[in-house]
Amino acid sequence: EAGVTQFPSHSVIEKGQTVTLRCDPISGHDNLYWYRRVMGKEIKFLLHFVKESKQDESGMPNNRFLAERTGGTYSTLKVQPAELEDSGVYFCASSQSLAGLHEQYFGPGTRLTVT
Amino acid sequence: GESVGLHLPTLSVQEGDNSIINCAYSNSASDYFIWYKQESGKGPQFIIDIRSNMDKRQGQRVTVLLNKTVKHLSLQIAATQPGDSAVYFCAENTAQNSGAGSYQLTFGKGTKLSVIP
Image 1 (tube, rainbow over the protein chains, first blue to last red):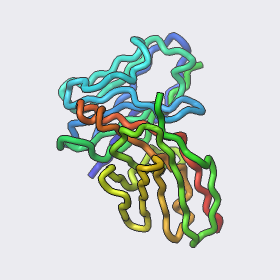
Image 2: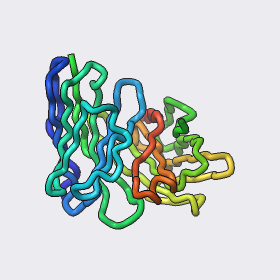
Image 3: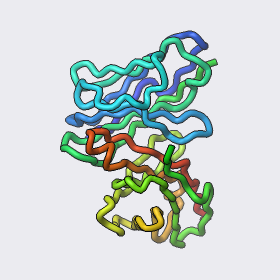
Image 4: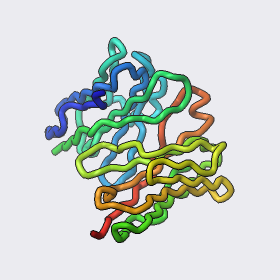
């Protein structure tokens, strides 16, 4: 079974530009999560999708971040315009569709560098 | 706000010895805990989880202990191997969140485990 995949693995952009990150969850997983780790800090939750709906977006830092999951399969996270403090590693995770908490499987992450 | 933290940022152990990685949490409402292992260039890999109605859970070479009285979580790795070298994170979720359908995890800072051959 394929795991969670993310694209690109690394992105370097200039301040003010736009970047779109993509996540493909494990097939059949309705729950999809975005997390990020900025330098020197803990991994922080951004948001949680159940299928195509945003279940919890309390971790989104500001309106420069837009996450979508049209069709309830893969998800994109767009940062527009990017700022220096957005640099870090963005992780996607997915978990199975059963109700309640279950282990979240993480992708390898996208390392975003804003210069 | 309340958060999950780690006692020791680094831990070095001899190959074959047992490792114990500790984690303190401050949110008494936390009821689900996970240990993750992260190797360089990879995402966090699930190791083992435990719910608050248990105080011990065992996996293959790993054991997680939960002490709710002192809000402490530990991960024990038996017969540590070079392949166990990584950063280990504990993470938690609260019943308040999960009851509302939010499964967000709160992560600690991580402990780097180095295995000496």
